[in-house]
Image 1 (cartoon, helix red, strand yellow):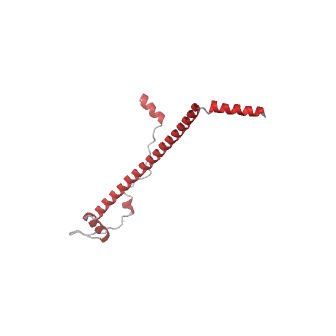
Image 2: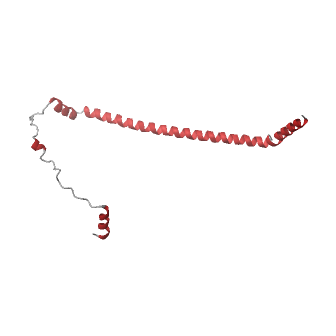
Image 3: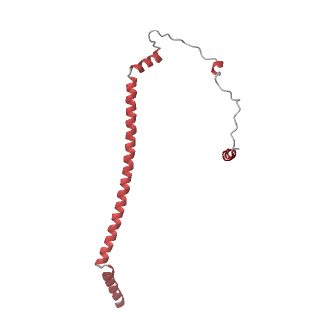
Length: 141
């Protein structure tokens, strides 16, 4: 029993004077503070990056919506213009200006539709191979 008590007292003394000295406590507190400072700095940088990404996304969306609004305003101006109203009346209501006559033409015949079509029987020109192109370039062959 005495040796156990002695061992415990020695252990307590060693803890008190070797491990829990003022210098060691300050050192451990400094290490813990450095760890928390580093963690909080990385956390803050990560949050700032995420927020900057969200801000950039919102700015792009705002620019896109502003373009859409501007486009719609221009369309409204065009639809309220006299030129569009006249074109719309001409197309939908067959309105004519003074001195104009409306002529209805028959559908095109098959011969007229096929007049300017190119025939598929045209022989394709064979393109030289890559090797022959190089030989021609290098040696003029």
